[in-house]
Image 1 (tube, helix red, strand yellow):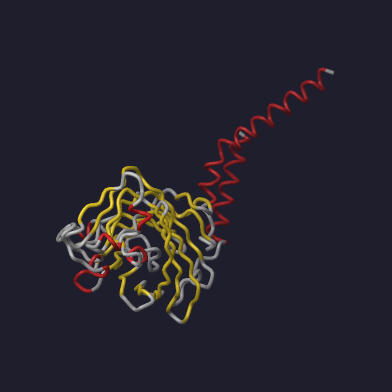
Image 2 (tube, helix red, strand yellow; image 1 turned 135 degrees about the vertical axis):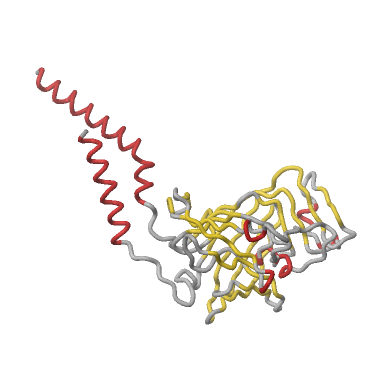
Length: 300
């Protein structure tokens, strides 16, 4: 009973500290993490890649040389590469410079043996993204505007083509590189229940058009509740991916695997609950050791 009481008091104190003494993250025109040197790295697997081109010669040779790759299209508006087995990939995002509301990002994409880097200009408040030559790429969803449970926010797109997302809060924190963090779920499925057609190989489309209620693939993505940075989700038809000429891909949910950005205080209550079996074992071992130690001394 004393062991359970001690554990209860530890959990209560940790929850009290988290609620009353951890300062909330405040946002001005741009989030606090939007400063020089901020880095995010995601990893996952890919089964196919669709390119915004009908010319196979524009496809990176490294991808065409992957064993078992098949090519579809080539005489239409898109080329699709299908891999025999899943191929690992990484997306690295670095904020190199902030000039007012504009951020200069260095984005590196790795798919199997293929690696390429792009410099992009992003409006930090709207997430609107442009290549260095000024070509519009739509919006990135690597982060979102501040929001909370129950909100319906514009996710991507413009005007009548805007894709909205319903915001909810997960009851259980999600594992991140910085421990268990409280997470928001953004769901675009409801807003696209009418009018969604998807994208096929005969579709001639731009990165901006791909981010519309008609073409943008419905999804559920998960964001850190303090910084509003993507923790896990799908990023096909994202501006950062379009910068590499890729319209869509068979990405399994990507996950944040590394960052130097402070995601905020981890959920101490759930972390302690995860550790409770180990705490219990240590307590039992300590009690057992103490019992036998004093019993042995008494017998002497």
